[in-house]
Image (cartoon, rainbow, N blue to C red; front, top):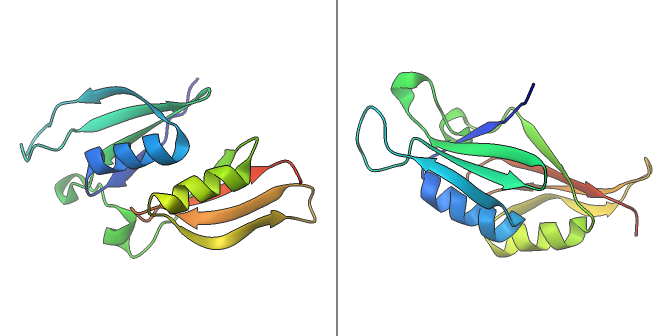
Length: 129
């Protein structure tokens, strides 16, 4: 079994560029538009380490709504990194905002949270410093 989250965003190409620059994601494939041909790819798949995730455009008729369409995200995406500070800094440099600073936590991890430019919430965690 494999699980690949799909993040719904207003602009999949812009989101793909962000995730490549901020997370070092590798763009694996892109599918052409489906349904309303507005030029946006229907899905772009990415790989980060062993994990994969996809981005797709918001399409109200299909019930695909971005966090901004819904007034916020109901999902936290957790990423474990060798250097959570560097990942957080790259995300912020490319347009994410810090919602909880990355710090050593009493549960034995260094972690914090960001909101990416598309409204998705990320927990970035790693070893203590």
